[in-house]
Amino acid sequence: MSMPKASIVMIAHNEAQFISESIRCIQSQTEKDFELIIVDDASTDATIERVAGFRDRRIRYFRNARNMGAVYSRNKGIDKARSNFIFFIDGDCYADKSWLASGLAAFGDNIGVEGKIILSSPSNSISDKIVENLHGHQYMTGNMAYRKDALLEAGMFSSDFKEYYEDRELAIRMMLKGSIVFSESMCVRHQLKKWGIRAFLRNARKVKGLVLLYKVYGWKHYMFRFVVKPKDLLLVLFPPLMILLFVNGRIKKKRDLIFIPLYYMRAVYMRLLIWKAAFDNKVFLV
Image (cartoon, rainbow, N blue to C red; front, side, top):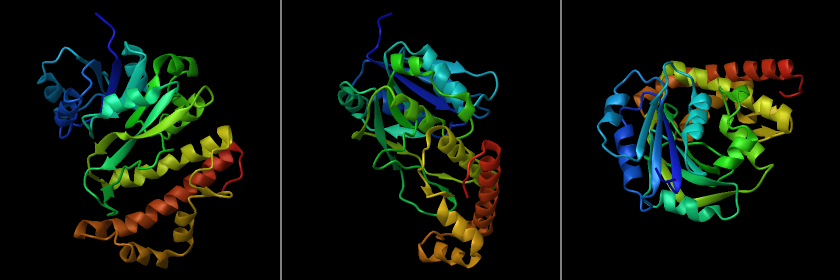
C-alpha cells in the first residue's frame, strides 16, 4: 500500500450526531491523497454505526476497548499514521474543502501548521460550549498539523497533561524544534454544543494545566502577573459583577438562567483548584 500524502487523525467520543458530516467533509477535500484514521474512544452511542456506513478504503477505524482520553487516542492515531504529515481534527468539526490542501501548502520548512477554528453558529451564551481559534497561538488539536518524525522525536502527547491543555503543552515542546505557522485558510467549523451541568463544572479542572504549564515552561497565557484568570478572581471577590453577564448579552434564553449560579460556583471551584495546584507544584500563583 502506497504512502498517502497526509494522514488525518480524527478522535471521537459519542459524536454520532456530527461524525457522519465530519467524515463527508473530509471526503470532499480538494486534496484526495490522504488516509483518515478514526480513533473511537469507546463511544456508547451510535458512533460506530455511523462510521461503518462509509465504504472508503482511505478510512481506517480503531476503537478503544475502554475510554482512554484524548492523549492516548491521539497518540494511537500518530502510531497508526503512514504519512509524515499528520492533521488532527475532532469528530464534531467540519473541515472546509480546501482545509487539507491549505495545510499542506503552509508547511514549507515549518514543523507544524495551526488552523483556524470557527464556531458553526455565533454565540456567547453561557450555556453554550464555545470553541474558537480565530487568530492563532491557541494550538487546539481540533485543527492542527505536525510532521510525524518531529512528533515522535518530541515524545508525542504527554500523559502528564492527560486531563488538560495537552495540545498547548505539545506545541510548546514542538516549537523547541521548529516553527509553527498559523493558516487562516486551513479552517474548520466546530459544531455548537450545549453544556451539561456536570461537564460545565468539571471544565474548571482545566486550570490545573495552566499552573503546570507555568511551572514547567513559564507559560503565562490567561494570567496577569501572578494572577490566573483575573476576571474570574474578581467575580469571586465581588459577586455583584455577575450582572455583567446580562450587560454583555450572555444571558439569551431561559436555559442560561440555570447557569448563572453555576457560573459563580465554577469560578469559586476554579480558584480553589488553582490554589491547590500552585501549592502542590510549589509555585506562587493566585
